[in-house]
Image (cartoon, rainbow, N blue to C red):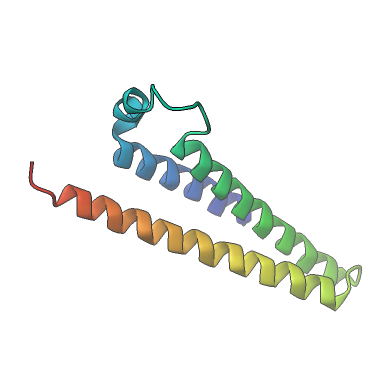
Amino acid sequence: MIELVGGVAGRAIGQAVEQAVGAGSSVQGASAGQAAGPSFSDVLQSLGTGVIDNLKGAEAQSFAAVKGEADTRQVVDALMSAEQSLQTAIAIRDKLVTAYLEVSRMQI
């Protein structure tokens, strides 16, 4: 189940980043004089990967609890961590969409 969400989330984040930064060409030219570091899309991709890993861990803890192999405290901690990660990712996505819509409304 999480694999399906992960695939869709990864593609959606990638498409949003490509649209927001114009496929990266203008950003790379502007940052030529700056120190090299991770790109914006790399940061968002690692964020998405971290959220997906967190969700997979919570799902695994839930299955372990159903089998009777995990402590209730471990399951609750994993679920709370996954929920917090997911809420953070959703908030970042909402901010990205809002920023993209604002930029698209600017007059040239």
